[in-house]
Image (cartoon, rainbow, N blue to C red; front, side, top):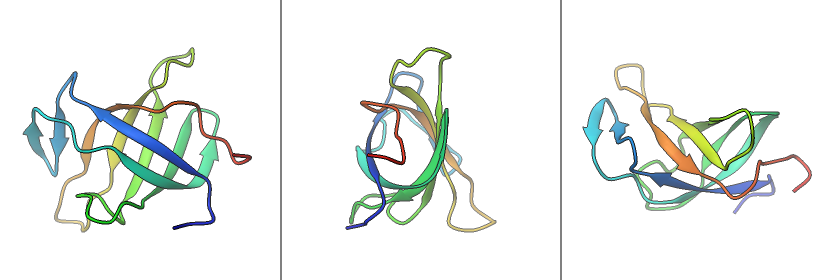
Length: 100
């Protein structure tokens, strides 16, 4: 796996997802990401789960509300410049930190 801290992300379908620029009603499967960058309300990392549609891709999580609710905006970077990002919303159990 990875020696970096990790966070489990559960994408949710509430507002729909855009995957590679195409709308999708169902959210992607939950995934684990290795955290690489920590800010108070923003986290960057890589999807670790083999077989996941986003494996190896860089992900940005942003806290959705001023008060912590566990809800995050998710942006998954595309593989190349001719592709589009994947975006949607999700849940995480706790705000990630470098000390976990």
